[in-house]
Length: 234
Image (cartoon, rainbow, N blue to C red; front, side):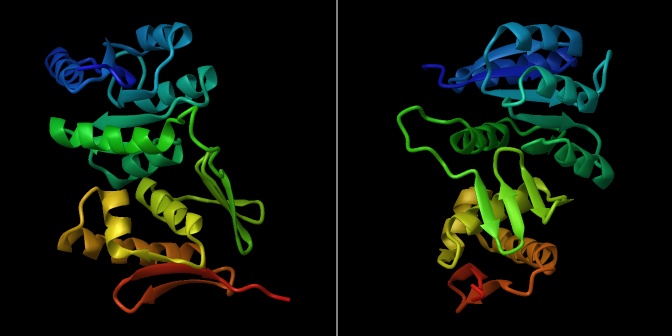
């Protein structure tokens, strides 16, 4: 199978690192596996990768610190975290540092592949495709899809990865209907009852984040889907 994307995997557990690198290789990825942060940084300095997969618990440096050093070398390289930590504060910290996803151990290899493909299909640019809009003006808010930031005036607002992806999809279709099916298959990769329940929770979160501007609303359209509406003031 042809390698479509190049990944760097930073995982100090020899068994897990071998398992993931072999499985991802079988699924068509080009995988460079390193067991510590310093070795990973050297690889990133001299090679081109599409995605970095970082273990949080490393012997020489935690994954959070490593992610910032990675960003200093290559600000455009997206990264996700693998971790045995389950505390909400760690998950939020991971996203606040710019992670595109956060997977908890034990890792389901099939789920990892689905998530990587979904992430890279959105994040890696195709040179033959039309340039994508990266800044969206939503009333008094600005959403930047390159820096993964939502700002109200100049104040940053923290979003989780799912919140950011959902708001981006709604912003791309501003004042137009996004169906439940479109949202669930794009953001969750699966249109089912349980994800639909999760979607309603995330919509509530976004409504709170956008509540500072009364011109903005996320409307539930007759059980068909949602629409991000922004009233134009004259």
